[in-house]
Length: 256
Image 1 (cartoon, one colour):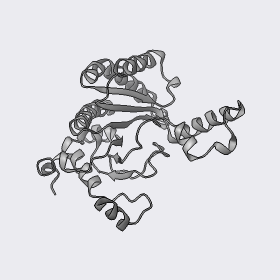
Image 2: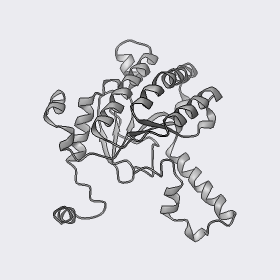
Image 3: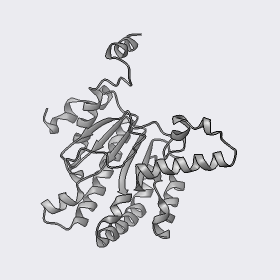
Image 4: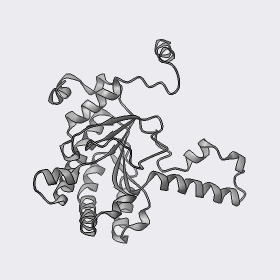
């Protein structure tokens, strides 16, 4: 099916929609390079794609959207690019938070935020507090985040509780560990999307993606449109999610 026809032929209400979508927004720099533009321009175009997909999630009634904006490994990029990314982050927060608030979006940030400039951390705090009352869509921005960091922090908190006598060692199980992770209060992602052609999860939500449906596309993030998102949702809706059961069991439960 041609991508441009997906939106016209598949109405969102016809699909079995995910409650929570997680996205690695890959390809901004390559998009700019293809157009002989500075890499920074690719990141600016990437912000426009974020606006499109936030709107698309709201339109479809998706509850949560988690975006991998800056990984703990991204500090290894050239200092100039990192600096420009931080400037863009500040500019985008100042520009977008009021619009997101008006549209019922609750903004949250996950990751090791202590690494950021106090001015940026203050803007993050303001955005979270200003939008905390919203329930139409939870928008989670992962910055200086890594899945291994998330697991290590959860293990450290459980160890501290055990040492303080608040928790027995035998009580530390998968449920206890999962409860200490970032976004433990949200449903685990049903659909993971990665743009840019790479087919790996790159230390993103390692625990939370255990049963997530994975979708990879060659589209670079600035080119990821509402129609492309519809195609990913159609792929998700066509899959049978068994969670260890047989296909027959799933079909029987649907008929029950």
